[in-house]
Image 1 (tube, rainbow, N blue to C red):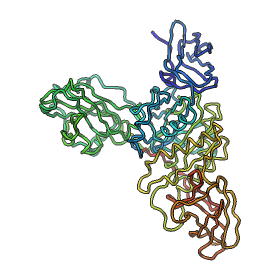
Image 2 (spheres, rainbow, N blue to C red):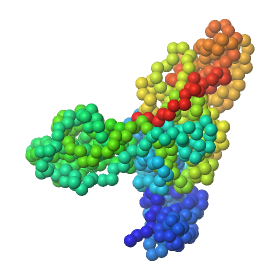
Image 3 (tube, helix red, strand yellow):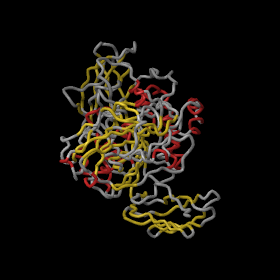
Length: 619
């Protein structure tokens, strides 16, 4: 019986951080001597009483492929095709998770990702009440097929680094939509901060159900010859809760169709669109595809599976889909027009699949709310198992789920960063994105939760090794998920190239430095202001207030590397704000094409200061 087990960060095609003493760990029989060979490095360790071992290997300069060889007693494990380069952890909520295939320019960009020296590791989305010791993931080589479902931000970030540094790049995606920062922070870290302790002390919250596989009683429910006399009917697509099925768990759906003679022997495309949460899909009793926790962006993935032509015969056949719902709504939830089966070479010659399906419950579990993730559960399930795998740094895109508690985020976000660095025992760089614009442009200056969240994000720049890049100008008034992920990734890459890799480049837009107030005018100076200019007819986005504290739009003029403001009301200027709204009008850039960062000079209390409710909805 084998004892040796390695964590999923050490699988074939892995990337190890170069020029480091990289930790290698795993589990074997207690007391076993373990030796690890990599390049010219050879180190040994002895497994402790729990069977865990850890040692460090010298990775050397970038390159590869190499083999990582682990001996534990009589066992030998070889990890093949290992590269040495730069490894980045890419985390946050839905805008980090958003897949490349659903981003602007996907049709052009995806074919460009033919880079065998870029490697991808997608961390399955799992919440845990206690820290996990491993994930169920694996490294894959970057290709148009594998990158399509990977984070669009991370993909563009990694490709830019690869093109500039000419070294292997490893990207670890650990992100989940609709999640608040406290879910990514340890309870111990939250408890250590008085104003955050209430988050850790709350006992509300849960973690999703785990699919333990098909029950023995349902092992043949995909069989076309199955007796379905005790099955019921349901209109599809819809959440099964709307059909009166108030459960989480596993439900099977079956539909019989007639394959026309002209399809015989042809590869078919079976599209069931979105399944919530996971599915195993069968055609004629044979599995043709599945989507599980290790599938990137499963929550928003339109399922399209290929049916091999060798299995396609004219006449009646059965399509069966097992759907497992771990919490919240469950079922086949896509759009009716996206549910069909057709020849792979002619999708217009299709049979619609929406409508009446047979269904039967395999396992009914107690319903759990998708809005009640337990505090720290994503830290336990999706961050802890990665440490102490050596990384060059972190890129982070999150904050929408904390916007109603922006004032608290000033404390929470730095606490999370320190928590991760303490977990790794490494002060790695932490680069993050200021939230994109969302909702309508303001007609008049107004207060804004999102503006306060951006301000809270910027305050974290006080921590060493951090940098903020702006996506404020890349927003979409109608969608909290703007599709321009290329510029976000490239701006993060610029920050990494300048701040981590020492490149002499401008990596940030103009940053407010000082204001000289002169009655009803003010002259503003900025860092990174070379080539200061406005995009559009005139510079916009500045608001000023006098002693009454009422903000109004200001007249503005760019003079060299300064901006001169004038009050339209004739009042003396006391306070200044720029791009302070949900979806700001600010349009000032520097010669590098990077937008001015939002700022304010007033110290008016945040409108979110009194809010202490717990948020963290999945979405």
